[in-house]
Image 1: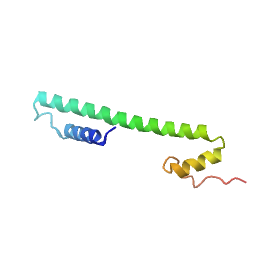
Image 2: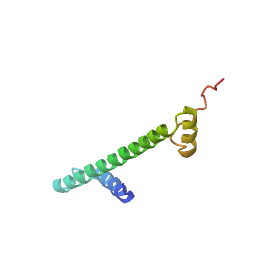
Image 3: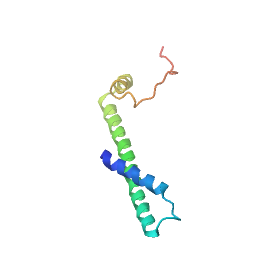
Image 4: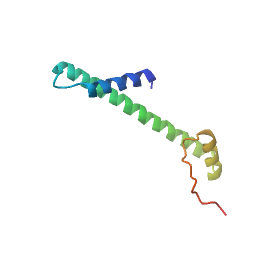
Length: 93
């Protein structure tokens, strides 16, 4: 999704939270509400698409490597933020 769309979505959501419904015209408040609603949907779609992209990358890595050690090493090298650092991991004997 385009960064400018997400920026506009964030501005619309902020405008809705900054608006005071008691001081605003009902029609104007409805318009601000609809813009914020569309902005929330755009943000939600961006988050869901990012998760799907991560899942597809991990699935492709899982299909490419049969050995779990090789798969983990490749993932750590190419996608360092994908796997958490496991410092308390037991060492193999």
